Each structure stands twice: as C-alpha cells, then as structure tokens.
Image 1 (cartoon, rainbow, N blue to C red):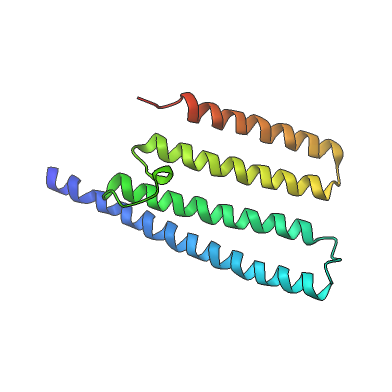
Image 2 (cartoon, one colour):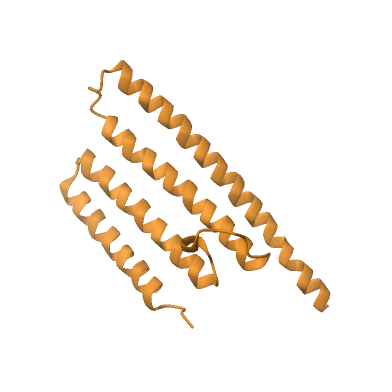
Length: 150
C-alpha cells in the first residue's frame, strides 16, 4: 500500500500538464491579441478610443497565463522534484504556492478594476466594485502574510 501511495504522487502530472497547456494557450492568445491590437492602432492611426481598454485586457490575459504557469511549476516542485528556478519562483510548501497565486490574483483584480474605471459607465457600480476588489485584496494579503506559515 505504501508503494502505491508513493507512486500516486505522479497523478499530479495530469494537473501540471493541463496547467502548462492552458498557460501556453493563454500566452498564444495574448500574442494573437497583441498583433490584433497593434494592427488596430496602425489602421486607426492611434485614434481608437477603445485602444486603452484593449491594452488593459491584454495585460489581464498575460497575468492569467503567468498564474497558470506558476501553478504548474509550483505543483511540479512540490510533488515531483526541485528544478532550477529564479529564487522568487521557488516553492517550498503549499502556502508559498498559494501566496504567489494570491499575488497574481490581486494583480488581475487590479487590472480588471482599471478596465472598469476607464470604461466608467456606472459610478456607483464602479465604487462598489472597487470596494469589493480592495476587500478581497486585503484578505489575500492577510492570508499571505499571516496564514499557514510554520
């Protein structure tokens, strides 16, 4: 039974491969969007009023791709073996992985809020959305700082 449990850790390779595939797809999606945005800027001579929103959404796409990549690399390090990575990306335990992902989630929420701010359709809705983003960000920062450290 012990050998079976030891070998079962390789089941995590399914999550790792899936996350890497999704990360690659998101990076390619971002690259495709980048080309489309650049072509739009060229054809409109930079006068497209929605260009700023498109660029903000582009940042969001790459942040999601980065989050998927960090998740895949972190799971590999935790369950399979250590790999040579920059120090900021080294994952020692599940808390480290969750903290790094929380940081990316906060960035995605900030970019999403910025998009809402630029569009500015509903001032009260934007205010409530900003408050919600701030509360969730504060909770994630508190969790990263105080939660789960041994």
